[in-house]
Image (cartoon, rainbow, N blue to C red; front, side, top):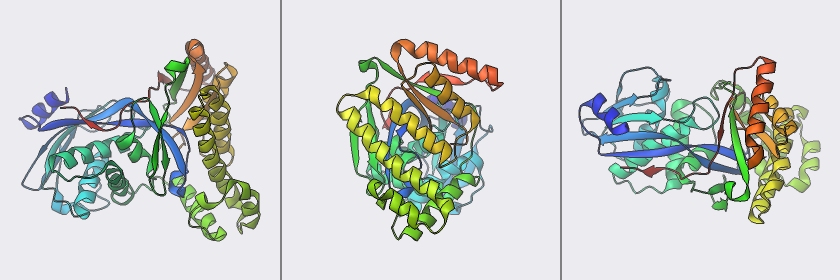
Length: 381
């Protein structure tokens, strides 16, 4: 289908087709820009790009998604600069800018995108768009970039070109995850471990509940949390909050000059510890025991980091009341999605209970689907 879309848009065939997935973060939220630990896994939902090189410096971008304005966005690679103002096209254009700024000769491209990653749902649709662009250009131009380096360049595109102060997790998950695993990632040195995470084999299911409340990370609140964490690290004399040991948390909180920063520090330090606990439980085969850790993480995001919303809180409370093993919001917050860990036999009942709770509260009907740990970015054709 993406090849057909390319031909319909540009009048010729592409050189290849690539895919990069969205992601769900199992545990480890707002820790990535604090040099901490995260644990995402890739979804089967992906952004697909049909791509052909150009030699004339023109960059033509087109999306077949009904969520973006119709028409081809045409740019010139020599004129790309941060703050481009091209809307959705800033994400792939930013990747081209970042590649060229790093010294890689990209002389242009025609790209047609199609995506099944829900936008605004906290499932990293923007990272999928960036990573699929970078992986395709890496292959076509023979750049030889390792996947972790591709993730870094994509993060730079989002931070500098788009202006969204996100961490490294989303791009790394899209680029590096493997099927049937969650990715333990140390965001300081990008050390990685693939942790087996096959829920179906254990009679479990992980539901993703898209609240349909959209968010925009570049609009202030996310940036405020990041700035607060940086201020707290400076006051505590460490490079990042990741350097505060869990055992030393209370002492660190007492030493903070600004008491308003204490909840931010408490969340980051305890969330890093929750990632470690989930890894321990999964590696010992006790997947059911991660449920309460997920719920504990949601409470921290809601009460200390204050990035939840009524709809996300309702998913968690309704899911747990219906018998879920655990639940929490996933992604940056202020809307988006939550995950709910359930026994496979209770999945349908739990989903119905959440939908009924939304109807009673007068919210839009949520979108519910099963999350299956899937492959990272790859060439399809």
